[in-house]
Length: 345
Image (tube, rainbow, N blue to C red; front, side):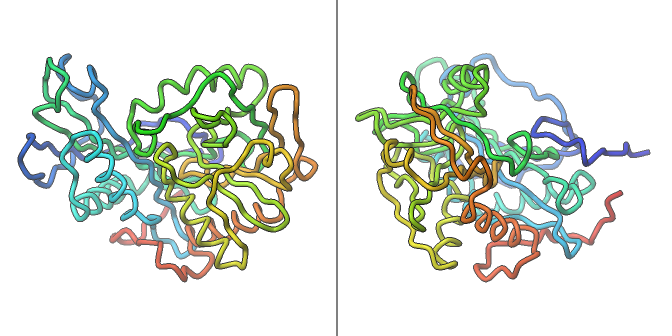
């Protein structure tokens, strides 16, 4: 008998599900379709390239139950393309788009009972690409593993659409020019754990990183892209190779322009941000999270009386409306998972 899931208690945390997908490829060969297997631990060599040299990538996606009862994905082809770009940057064989999309749909369909009801959360999808072959010298691993697992999640930040407080880091940077900041490499994330933990111990939800060269331009919010609004204009840091090209970021830019807003992708100074009308961060996990305050040294700015700003709220409704098919998808972003509707208790 299947366990009952308390959808209202979901947080953004790991829960093992039923099934995962695994494919392998030797260096210099072509990928072949993988297989579905029960979710569980894996065996890997201590000399695996991913363990010793960080030759690994991951993606973050969500499957949601639409108001029509089906299960849908949001722009999965963009995740496929980003994984391919990252694989090339890290010297790994790119996974073909069709194989990626078929694998994602297969895993979601196999774990359909874990997709929360509309408005109760989402099924988080984690595709990973690792150099799993044993290697001693610093060079590409001889074999690679492409794997996908999933788990049901609630809001990334506690409180959902409640404004969060952020602290600007003057001591740490997320990425530097010429590095791997523009791809979703696994090595980009561990260095941010300690600064993030420090900010949370001071009562902040997350850290804001400035650029590593001039220390004055906003780059990212922890693991999310940054936006601000000033005099009705939407601003976001331009992609310079040190900022992850977020799929939610790109979608918000298109949505804002479609709704009549001017959007400027440019270098965004922290001094300008502290004078903005409203700010928010965005990503697959965070969706859109309003920023209630930002502290930079001794200066703290409160936005919109710590309420959700009007532009932030409008874009959140527009984005989530498309993702759950409450609103018409004029962009063609939503992709239905081919499977019969399944009742969720």
